[in-house]
Image (cartoon, rainbow over all chains, first blue to last red; front, top):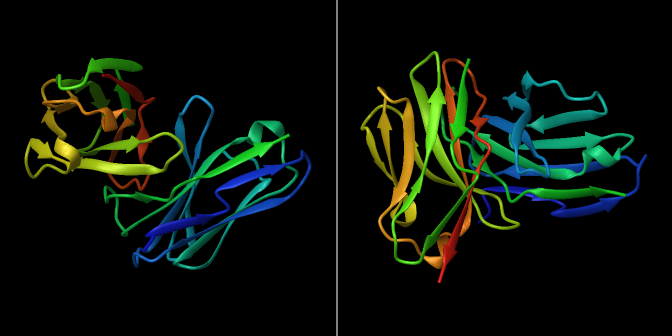
Length: 113
Length: 113
């Protein structure tokens, strides 16, 4: 029973392509997130949704567009991929409220060539 | 504003010896503090969490951390290292009304046989 699952786990694609990463959680949480981990292992939040409403939108290029069809799903769509988008993208979820434990998925390794 | 500093980028210990991973935080609020572990090519797993209930927090796999407000520290310790402890460890802070986790830069723990 995977709590936070994301697909695909590995993705290699060419510059300029459009790709999506899907995420689902079965924990009953109201809040979901996308985090990005760069090549130096640094982790930074990109987006957060609470009950399908966007509550955090960090300084992220508008080529990145999150979509939350329901509170159990938060997908990440990336247009016109660039070399610098290569990273590990982590989906996560938590109960509503600041300071709650955030549970992470296994990560999606994106390589742009 | 919140921030977290992990004082060592790499820590190397021999199997069976104690582990100390250092973390200092800065927060305008009463913080929630976490330690997460990331094994190679894996997602992030919660080791332990501090939320003001007790200053000494016990986590999984024999790890514990002590919250010291006077020193603004939240160091992670384990009495005896195991080979399976080799991984990247992240100290994390959140607090106030923010849903965001602020990650430290990580400490890579190496365990020598």
